[in-house]
Length: 186
Image 1: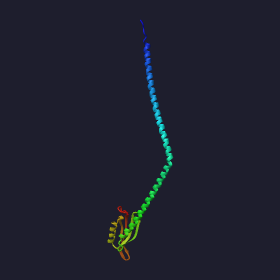
Image 2: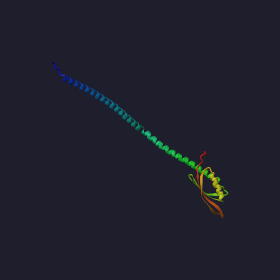
Image 3: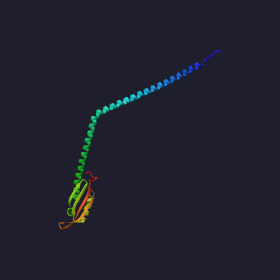
Image 4: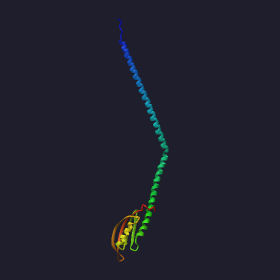
């Protein structure tokens, strides 16, 4: 009887299968490494491109820095000029207000029955000191002040009886707030 040894065929098949698995694993590993290398090259080229862009932008910034400095200097000058213009406009408005307030107070003051001893204006505050023949005259004067276009509010700070030239007169102090009327185009 003939005997056939099958053991080496099994080992040969096992070795062939192991080689097949090793070849498949090597191929998969090679594909993965290739994909990783290609991905790394893409990322590296993208990073290089971005770095070149950054370098180019920094060079452009340096090239334009003089212009940017000039713009910043011009903006500072513009702000200073605007501030000066605002101050001038405010002075014009304040001086116009002073003239109009003086005119209005002069027109309101009844010359025959009262007189002002002092008139002090500082910004939007006005302080009046004067003498009136009686309290009725002072009350009418305060009503006229209330109706003035330029006097926004007032307070009678003091009112006292005082002797002047042998007569009893009413001495008064009034504090006022003044401003240009909003509706006026003057």
